[in-house]
Length: 453
Image 1 (cartoon, rainbow, N blue to C red):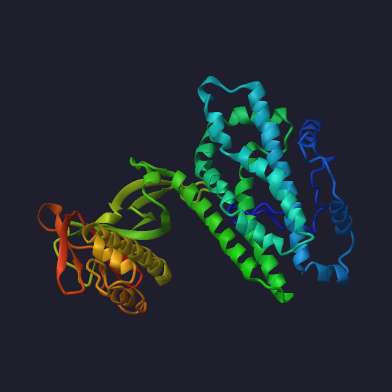
Image 2 (image 1 turned 45 degrees about the vertical axis):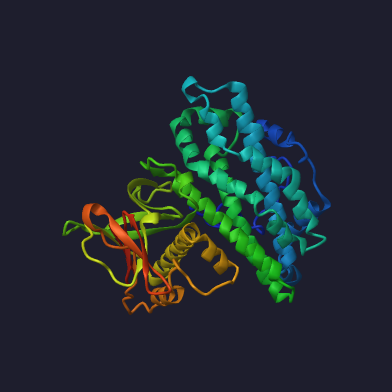
């Protein structure tokens, strides 16, 4: 199996287990002496289990019908998971006990002081946990297969340390590129065939590999008639972690935004749209933009270094979610309009759903502030009135319309004098409650969302 280019592809950097003998934690005769010394000194890893030897013997045999049948079992997937985990921990050990230790001994250039910590992020924490805990827990699964999904479910929050690692990764890449000569020297010092960049991408490759192996484990377990409820849950969780990792790396490459991204709430969606801007009646040509939807803000950015394996994003515009609302018709008078053209209707509907959920949360928050007693009664089932909440059924029907129709739903309101407006929120008795706010409008068409403000 060839090595894939994308570091976030589930199969990236993983060899076919039939094509090689797993090295486990043993030193390799092909490695230079210095690197073998580092590998052999890794604490707790200088061992070869009985299971390793069985796999080694098996991998040398021909693919008999019996062996072919075994390769389609959950046990085969579990074995691959364990063996690749051991190889992964060995690679992390080369980073910690090789690169990091040599840098500590050698020192860094004056203008690089402090930056070396950014290069490695929390990789030492990742290494310690996998070496001291996770490998051993995976090996226990050989005696109890049901322990495997439970292991991932139980430690899902712990695996979020990969999200932290990925958030730091763009900064790390920049420093490694800036001091490439220095890091090439460190690589030569420890006699490593792979560069520091090759090793630093491995945690990203590994966190995406888990979901692929769990999906295979689910497929073969299902064919074997096993209960797959927990396995399905584990697959779902381990599909979300790589997505968060990818989100954090993209955010780390966003340049020019003066606010704090960590203060904008959770990143809900990011997508590439073709955006047109209409300002004072003048319509711009369509431009490709990466758009980030946070709980508190929508950010438009321009893609830099298109086609590169490490793209960047330049901040262009932002709209606060608190300026959004939902109406049944579009008011006139807005001065600037952003139309977002999605690749398909599914993308549009996902964005609409998230925007609606944010607006629901805002309405509920306003209800609690303005009518706390009524709101409390609603939450406890004490009444049917909805003084400030929107009509969910009507808005839901509008957003799930066929891609051939043009829903009339509008998120937001028009501008009035001096860029202000009265935001009207429908009530159960036909009245309205208003508050002044700068606003944006999000109009929903087949594949389009139009932000107007």
